[in-house]
Image (cartoon, rainbow, N blue to C red; front, side, top):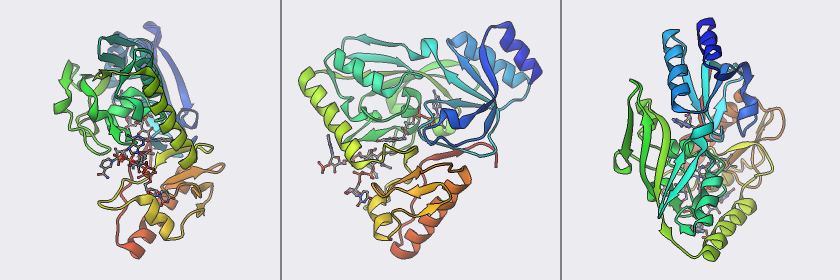
Length: 300
Ligand SMILES: Cc1cc2nc3c(=O)[nH]c(=O)nc-3n(C[C@H](O)[C@H](O)[C@H](O)COP(=O)(O)OP(=O)(O)OC[C@H]3O[C@@H](n4cnc5c(N)ncnc54)[C@H](O)[C@@H]3O)c2cc1C
Ligand SMILES: NC(=O)C1=CN([C@@H]2O[C@H](COP(=O)(O)OP(=O)(O)OC[C@H]3O[C@@H](n4cnc5c(N)ncnc54)[C@H](OP(=O)(O)O)[C@@H]3O)[C@@H](O)[C@H]2O)C=CC1
Ligand SMILES: C=C(O[C@H]1[C@H](O)[C@@H](CO)O[C@H](OP(=O)(O)OP(=O)(O)OC[C@H]2O[C@@H](n3ccc(=O)[nH]c3=O)[C@H](O)[C@@H]2O)[C@@H]1NC(C)=O)C(=O)O
């Protein structure tokens, strides 16, 4: 770790050691990452990655931490977050180019400011552009796949390449990034000219639906489970009488059974215990297996 820290210091790259991940996840759960590194442009990212590789330090990329359940024992190695250049958003006609570190909500606002329609569905998803491409985030009739043109990514062997959306295997809560180890740097979206009043109305509508249906008052990572074929997880969980069920500080939301919320002091183990209880009960009572979609990461 000392060699990495020397390199970061020599290159004026920002970092903090033993950084509590509970401060960087919407669940507000998670022990410390050995080191959290913030990079502002590609050179710093490549320098940090090179130094981690030289010292055999594992690396994980952090977006907005809104689909993450981090171990109570923290994350071994380096967590890298993308700032500076990676938060830039530019518009070129009907095309928006965004850094992976930009928040989806800001991307949606830039689209509105430029009377560009197509991203309204994403307004209210509390992720970054990088995380949204990794998960192919979607809501209210749309998903990133619908508007994605390409992603520029850094491959594990250090190559920077622009990949067309058709080659990203964007599917329901999945993409090629779940398996290929690429780091998403930028994404390009193809939108269309629209009526700013109608765009704003749609954004307000999805935000209102979200506020009405989802327990935004509590820390969570959104939906815990994918929709099983031909059913809704929330309906199944509610039918099994699990609304309000708790394990420690983790609770099946009374407002939306598809969410597990942190009602105070929840640990990663609490959430995983409740996930297991829900999966076992729903399987036994309905036959459906609920596949977890939130990402558990860090030490066992
Ligand atoms: C209240 C609430 C509501 C939500 N509603 C929705 C919804 O309607 N629809 C939906 O799809 N999701 C929803 N989510 C879940 C979450 O916001 C999305 O999954 C989002 O896309 C995660 O983005 P993130 O930046 O927070 O990713 P993180 O949680 O930080 O990371 C998720 C994964 O992506 C990887 N990753 C992140 N950035 C990069 C990068 N630049 N390069 C490579 N890998 C990267 C991480 O390593 C990790 O494996 C909700 C979450 C909450 C808390
Ligand atoms: N399980 C699977 O295989 C699939 C899952 N998905 C995912 O499910 C999520 C929801 O997508 P999807 O199923 O397409 O639609 P939604 O499940 O998001 O629709 C949910 C509700 O939102 C309302 N709604 C639908 N379209 C719109 C819209 N354009 N604007 C405003 N409100 C709308 C409707 O509510 P109301 O009836 O009250 O009007 C609908 O019941 C996404 O995250 C997507 O990724 C999508 C496709 C396949
Ligand atoms: C929150 C996320 O995305 C959300 C996204 O916001 C919403 C809206 O588009 O649609 C999905 O939720 P969802 O499947 O629960 O959709 P909703 O429209 O909220 O509910 C589906 C159905 O379940 C019913 N429902 C929901 C909750 C509940 O306690 N009881 C219940 O019966 C609803 O009445 C509705 O008929 C996404 N989740 C997944 C895994 O597909 C996320 O991925 O983290």
